[in-house]
Length: 94
Image (cartoon, rainbow, N blue to C red):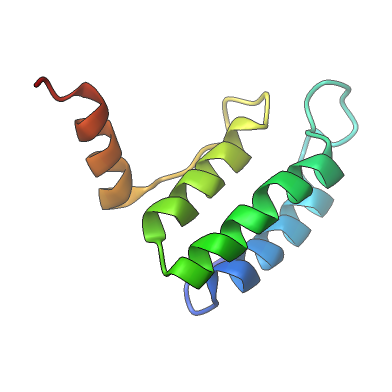
C-alpha cells in the first residue's frame, strides 16, 4: 500500500497516477486499460480545483471517477466518511 496522505491533493494524484499508469496489471489487454492521456486531462484539473478550494468531497469525487474509468472490478476506492455521506444523501428520503 502506497501512502500519499502527507502530500497535497495534486502531488498525491501525480504520485498515484504515475505508479498506476506504469504498473496497472492489464495495460497490455485491449479494452482494460483506460486512455491514460485522456483520463489525466479529465481528472487532473478537478484534483487541482479541489485542492485550491480545500474541498475533500470534490477530491473524492474526482478519484471516484478516476477509478470508474477502469473496466476492472478489482479497481476501487474507499472514500471513508465522505463516501458514506454521499451514499446517505443519495438514498435519503424526503
